[in-house]
Length: 346
Length: 208
Image (cartoon, helix red, strand yellow):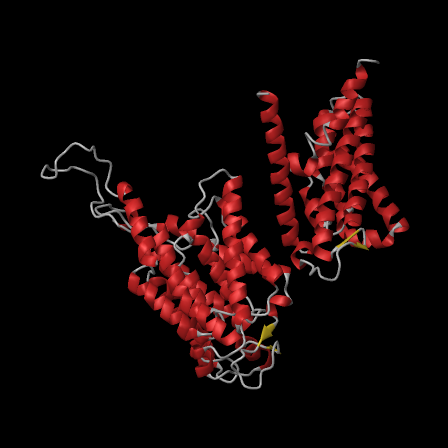
């Protein structure tokens, strides 16, 4: 299925790929063109469909742990994201690009950050906000400053502050009855000082946002994307590394009060954020130094919000906050052009 | 006199759409964002501003030939402050809950840029009658804008309008709408809507 779409897109993209070349010259003639000479055959739909594939383990885990309501929420979010995109592009009289899959990813990511008991209407509203305000009002894919899925989630956090923090225990826990409200590991840690076994966090057998609980499912998807080369390793490494280091410093200072770095990495949205949201191609910097700064500052901020702020979880706001700095980072961390001499260095 | 009425009408109606303060002139956004979490607050704020605007425009226009230009702004502020104090005391005496809800924003009408803007930009150059109509139009436009902002935010944020429950229990209130973030969202949306409509109007006017 994906191969087929990928082939189609490749053939579609092919006429664009070589630099403008009159049809005339025969192949053995010397072709003079400007660089770059090796052109990537990747296209937006191909990348996006791979990311959708990479999100399937997390979706499957959420359905396994939270039942078919999780699947329903994913479908509602994806459907309303695609509808909003179609509707907005019709209004703006732009070419409709729903098929490129970016709206599907926004919908899936948004759904994965919602609690399993979240109302359907809320999921629709969040998706609508994510696409219309978060993406299309900025000019569509490639122009948005903030990650649309996280923006939709932040809007939901402000709109339904109670519903979005009403968690249910996974149905795989034996004593759980339907819709028993529970606290997330981060909230347990923050407000009651209890830690959750690392193994439960790793597998995902805890209360929390649908797709955030299962570390292993997210890791499978993230490493698959890394293997395909769509993820820049600096971003998840810098983000998770900063979380581990800063969390570790707190832990070393007072192990009784602060949780271990492993807990920081596995609990809450750290994994999902690091692999799928920090690495968003549109809303992360393009220069290597900028990527390090972006990822590390985001990780530091996530831990600071978790341990010192009012909220139990800081991943969403840390990424949104750093998104705002991306244009600045891109501007000021441009690598030196080869041969360029800086006046200050002489 | 007969040919004077259309211009007076023009001065009045321009404040209702063409120069509607918060959305077209983007003036007076501070109270527009701060006090519009319900219709009643918005309308009360709008009426207080309307009162101050009318009185200050009248006085400034009447005194326009007797004021040295160097001190005119100071004089405007004194005139405006007089009526703001009146409006503030009136609200505090007659409608204590509203006065409490509006908080510091009634005294802050002193530095409202709509009022200073109309005094400086209109009343000091025009006779009393057009100044009065100008203040009336702009003030009513401002009140209507605040009422619309307040209505949208109250319906979405509380599920009610003018404290009457409008939406049933199925409606989960959007808390964000009564927070400052909601004010910015609604304001941005309304500015976009007003600009969109007026662009379409001008486009339709130029090539029929």
